[in-house]
Amino acid sequence: MLIPVGFEYLKPKNLAELDEAVRDGAFLISGGTVGVRLLKERIVRPKLVVDISEVEEAQGAKQGEGIVDLGAALKIYQLQRLSVNGPVSDMIRFVSSGIADPAIRTMGSLGGNIALADPSNELPVPLMLADASLLIYGQHRFHEEKIRGFIHGPHRTGLKPGEVIVRVRYKELDGYRWSYKKHFIRNLDHYVGISGAMAKVDSGKIIDLRLVVAGEAIMGFKYLAPERAIGARPSEAIIKEVAEEAVSGISPKSDRQGPSEYKVAVLKKLVELSVKEALGA
Amino acid sequence: MKVTININGKDYSADVEPRMTLVDFIRDVAGLKGTHVGCETGHCGACSVLIDGRPVKSCLMLAVQANGKRITTIEGIGKDGGPNEVQMALSSSKALQCAFCSTGFVVVGTWALEENGELTEDVIKESFIGNVCRCTGYEPIIKALRGVRKND
Image 1 (cartoon, each protein chain N blue to C red):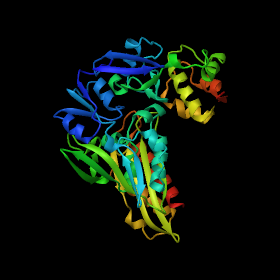
Image 2 (image 1 turned 120 degrees about the vertical axis):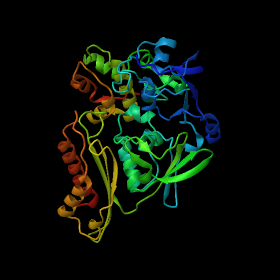
Image 3 (image 1 turned 135 degrees about the horizontal axis):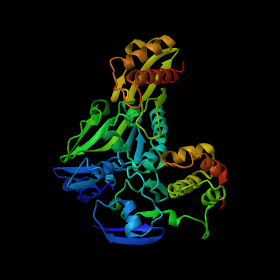
Image 4 (image 1 turned 180 degrees about the horizontal axis):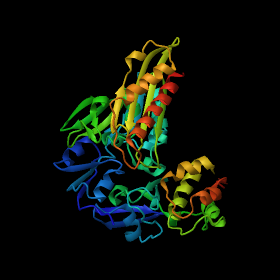
């Protein structure tokens, strides 16, 4: 039986209540799909658990003047049904539909998916492509941070103790095409590799190309904007060059998911497929 | 901590420790033993229940998180006092073996049918991605449920 150590539980309804609830050593959960497991396995042993799932400032989704503004408490299944338009939002809907299983999508939240920074968490990928901003609250004040700088490495972010992601904002990338590819060995395992690409091509030339790779092969998230592709015509040569750049310098560890070289080869292939699709090549 | 959860239309209230999981509340406080405890880590789906009509894994949720919510367990699933379409299909095709996982499959299958109106092979495979069966190899379950439609 996996039973957490005893703790006090608080569920603030808004940020003012959150200020009163959070104190040193508090462990924050939103959906709890990871947090409750950490509690049960006694990897964390907090005296206080603060459930931020109903904080009112972190609810809902809206779109205006080209900006999409999502509450961090939105559940993943709600993201599947986002009623906002544009390529980034389309990609978020698609990515959300493939996260874990229907039960986990009922429980897991947007904010949790970002804050945990697990290399197999998927929502950071479209959000990094869109250069999304995170509205963070803690210590009685708000500040905004770009998601690209927020994720420092596997399970490491810029979030300080007691801080929470309240909202996620991004500008729609009109005229962009996107593609998202991932590979796993078994259902619900960590992904060997993830590759998301967004591109704008006009008059047969690449105007912009953005790429995010993630998963076990890279043990983190890596954003690339291959400058050499800009102005070029989409071609196999460009695609292969981008794929080479994406996997350069990575040396994943060999484990039960496969040897290091296999993981690199998988990621490279995913990049090729996603870039090709995003370029419409 | 005082918790009240509506399970299958009936309110169950108890003073519980915050560390109690929802599945333990269902089994030990409400006394409804149909929801099984499998892996305890959210992988197997044996503990699946519906919260406000959507599936969750009750081993990964604290009872305090479910305070005030409306839950449906396997005991609350059925139609007109008998089995529903999913239960009928699994039963008549003898698609079950040890049946430890079956309550989770029935709960998630019932949600999938409600959501989609019909259980196509794609819907079945997508819906049950978080449910593990160690006996059947899944084929009999897929075969039994393929084409099941919601009868109003």
